[in-house]
Length: 123
Picture 1 (tube, helix red, strand yellow):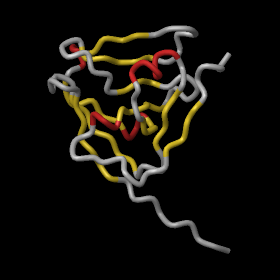
Picture 2: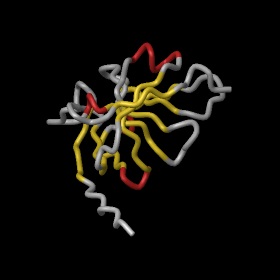
Picture 3: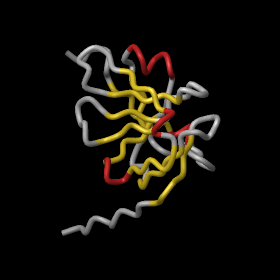
């Protein structure tokens, strides 16, 4: 029997462009995702999925605007000051967040596998 190596979660700080919204996540970046739904195509974000227990909003709750569409299950959050999309609560797995990795400080996505998710054809 082969033993699965233990996951090493690292903490990463993130923020919107103006810094009004600040957060941190814990992840080992198993993969990054893109999505072809109507909003993700337009915002062109590269995301990592983290469980809500590995997400912490540090500042800026009052600066977040929420946007929902279609089934109104997923909630996309935007900074009301600078307009940046830092994260969303996922539709299929609502106890997870999709984090825009371009909002993470000192992070490079190089070398992490990217998976295209299909959102446009979801019922």
